Length: 298
Image (cartoon, rainbow, N blue to C red; front, side, top):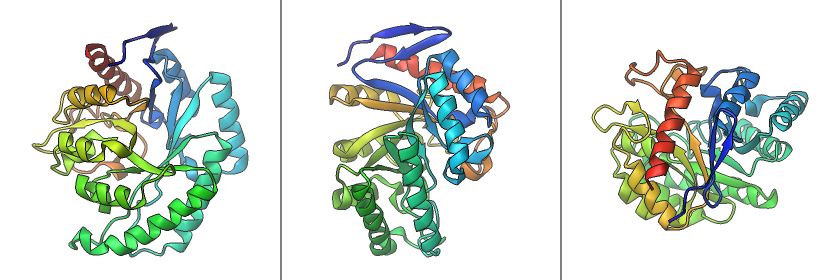
């Protein structure tokens, strides 16, 4: 097990035992990149999983906008841990051609911003249809993207988002056993598995060889509501402890989903409201502090 080594930074701490690095979806703090960076610096966080910036999806930013983003990141001493892209978050029967163009642009953006990973998904089956019936087209589309990623020296991270083909541990394992390689690995998201009724311990056991990135988010089985890390049914402490014992090194990316933020309604539907009245920064800090408490006990 890794020992705790905390380096004090003004306003907070960066937890760095053996390359275990804290990142997060800072658009949950505020749409403004300037405010995102200010809040991250207060908490001593040096990485960001960039999804939304100044009210706009990163993957739709122009080259000139990317240049501004790059300068601001450099000035703040913050780097991207991943591009939090929407790639693969469309229907499996939707026209793939424009999405393929967006995927190629996303790879280009990741390279321009020196992001080591791109978070992505595995398509929505039509409502009311069994996901397993769409195995072939899902694998076909993903295989095409993985081959492109290989040629671009890019690493794609599949997230187990609820409702997509790869939302269960078994279907995630199918995708990763079939296509898994140095350019296609797994994000482990505790809350998403809980919201799908999955046993997170079993999910980790199945996916352990493929996990290269972790989203810190917790939820309750009873109603799927998102709660602070360690307060739900995701078994974060147990599984993070197992990950450390198994030699995991890499990013723990905070995705609190505890307050209203730009785009929240499109990401999470039907969840309880008790956390959503908090400011973005307060909710993010709550999630951050809860994670630090968990890590301190490991």
